[in-house]
Image (tube, each protein chain N blue to C red):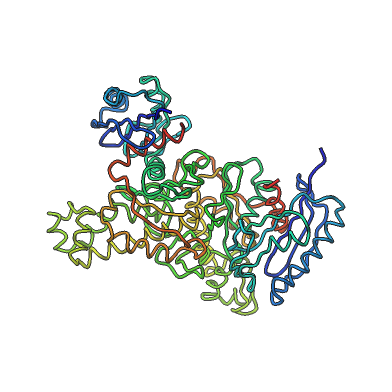
Length: 313
Length: 313
């Protein structure tokens, strides 16, 4: 039997990426163009379709299906973006219809965190597991859940908003409308924002100015023994650990995978996160579970979108 | 076609209940005996089996399957209780094998909260819904999740420990080993324990003594305008609301059903709980969702166990 191939599309606020991926995960071609959000979705889709034609021609194989990963919230059933904060102007945009009409191949859409969970399950740290919880800790905190080898969709395809488990019921407001959400403490955005408030002269010097402080600077300052930076970092890790423990208690997975930009901190994140999260999980649910780094790195967008398509093959 | 019937068994720390239930939910017979936990599981099963023979004889119909609901944690696959806090001495007890051997009918076991979720889905407030989150708020706080009309089991059948979503990441310890769990604030046990600390003379008078204060007394004091009792109650409702919002964000249900003894507070609980929970849920996940009281009341044990059996017919 000949291997089947899918077209994988990753739509972000900054760039549009596309690639042709074989069932076994080999990438035959790939490319990217800027999103240019200010020009609106029709313009972006025009450039995206040109990019897709390009990578399909490069790959030189027929495409069985298209998978699209995109920032949520979105409606995977209707194939429409709803109100994605990363894509202003894309409200109720019929992304799947536009892509299908232009390329003549059936397309499937899911949010980027769900796509990443499918990608890690098929090609990354989740291979061989049937029950997974995936967290992405980046500008925001998102999630995806694999149950019995399939994505857990919930009633409208918007389940697994694990960044909005509320680990501080009387804590500060989250832009989502909630309060004390994991994302409002432990996303890259909030780690940096919190560190700016209490920054030591060392951390400010590291970053150039108080306003320039990022999570990478916080991590560097922690490594250099900075006490104030360590307070923020430790608190963020405890918040994430409470979120991971809650997700294990709720979903009963075999493994928790954590990806996203903040995980570039490596063992500085994973050693305490794994220890604290499993330590505060119910014993009957912690047995045999581990908390591990994602494996797909910066390929997660395209490989996740490929996994979305492959899950429908 | 003749209606099929199941034997439903509800095992609690205080009583053992059994009944014969038809597919449509009619109870043909029922009865109960004390658990007498101190006498151990073999003695309890002996009395349980006698009770079962009794209710089967009363019903006078053949039994297709047996469903058992029991306090967790347990292993539904092996049919064994693990370390149920409500049943000391029942560690690794082969409950399903004992019941099957004695009665000669195939039996299925699930924890009481999962059984209650199945019961509400089939016979109660969840009829007609395919995606439900169920909370029970009683001595402890438990949960069950229905996805696509079926129980969400997770990898080992222990999913949906919704009382152990951790809504206060730096909060006080929970007996489960976690920290800041919903159960450690908002269970009947903890509502009463917290109220004892700050009890007003009025609340103490209501209960007879500080040590005698229960959640019912707290509710009565709130109704009578007691400020200290209201503080504890309001805080407990906020904790529950954060747990419910987290569960909606995680599981994306169509409806949240709340049962258990504490819900006898009625609108005093449900009005603020529903408003606060949906107010702090992500907008895209709150649309069309409601938070409603369970309908099975004190029949939930037997009807839940019946639903466990019927889900395997």
